[in-house]
Length: 264
Ligand code: OOG
Ligand code: MG
Image (cartoon, rainbow, N blue to C red; front, side):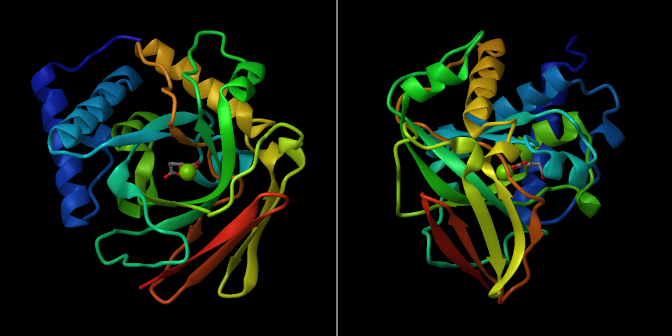
């Protein structure tokens, strides 16, 4: 995969995406104006944004995988998992009332989060290595917000946009994955008291631990490892659900607890 764009252009694309995020104004997908942007360039843009925000004083708390379930791939019309970074200031408290006035067109995703107690590295990372390095898993809601018009993008554009990352909330309960069948964890997402989507852990690459393994392998390609103490969102189990002001959501995961969020 060749890098087509020079570093000035990479900085320019990062500027455009950061402005769209700060001003909460949707823009055309990056590849409309930069048709030569490769997936490798897109990861370089994402890393440029990450480094800028860390220089501004933000803290990296982990990573996210996206497009790991058939429901999500079908919804977005793409068929390859992608990864992004999570900063401390993306986190919102479970049970809280989250303002969405600074987001463009946010959606909610039910996810299973992993928290590591040891580094996980690729290549060839397997589910067994993920479980050995996992401290606990938690129920999580990710709030995604693509910076692109009509919520439409291709793979390089969404990767450059840090895979639509905006906010996330973790539940108050945690459980060891040992002794749980991660594939059969039942997941129910309610919106305003009615079931909006349901699924099971196996929706995510057959086993959400496989999503963490895929992340370790993707990070290896960029010379990185998953550190100890990292939070990893393994990807939406169901399609994402649009949020309007006034909505409330509750996620319940069998054997793992749940969490609620309201939005204004
Ligand atoms: C891309 C991010 C997808 C997930 O969990 O699948 C994602 C998007 O659909 O906007 O976070
Ligand atoms: Mg997600």
